Image (cartoon, rainbow, N blue to C red; front, side):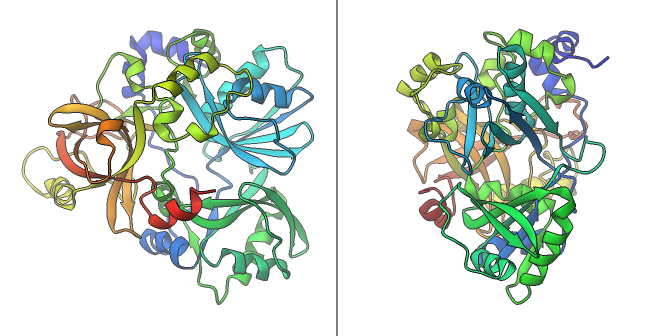
Length: 450
């Protein structure tokens, strides 16, 4: 019998204790790590064109039925007043207290037919409410290749970079019709019908292509052939996993499912295996200290109070009192180098800093301080070749969120947890400078304005 999250937390004594010591292996993207090297692959989406395979690491939740849109509207904070077929949006959900559950990309495929794609946290929340509520809907879940048996239902390829449009025109043999951001279009590539989302990743222009799995290799081969002469670069999982640092998207924020109205029943429904793991220097037995609002992550413009949804009243209160904002922290090179150098010195070293992505739990939550006072939390951290900088995404109190502000990131756990990804280490303080999010000027001036 599958253990529920509620039972696992009871056995561990608390939600924080369970998550901090979760016996789960480090997240591994089930895609080739590198085709050349991750530094060159990171550069490709800035200088030429990158081809990324997204077919394996995300979960698809297909939602169909007469009440599919009603369910999404009841759970999501977004407006659905003009959400027509062939459109997509960043779907966001909160709990009854207005704290973030998670986000994913929602595709409106056909009338009464949707595909919610991304990390499973928000997908689970939607499916739970669809099954427990009085909705005429059905669900089909296609989990990531890390846990699924057999092939995916769909292939999903990302084309990104300044030559993305040229690549698409060579692959389709015709001019690409102008498609607005987050709108879909249909193309023919090597005789195969391909659906496309006009998208951006790492702040660069591009397309997300998808279709039946059986067509995937044919489409990939056609893209590779069209990429000859365009410096097309296949990107592996190492570089891909770090791309969010340039676009300033936090992929796995801590989900507010461990307390609050209705969450006990949800935890009884949710398998413990999908709970995730908690890493970082923030140590608190009060699980609410890890929660975020959509405004902490810059999602305010996606919130719409034009309909009733779970958490609306509480979210309106958060909207009136936005205390934090999302920023980029550029870590001091000398301090990063000192932490890395500790691996070669006597004594207990600093927590290992992996490259290009340094996250060592599904939910990375590190303390950010100014003069010893906590002023926010740091999320994903890693290296951006295109900026030659080690950075993290953070949510800081407004008073300390101005570019140029000097802060300190506390890196490592004290005491050390028992997660498989954690070795014996000591905490270290790393100075950092607050910069805008996204950090890349191109991403701020082009991607975010859409």
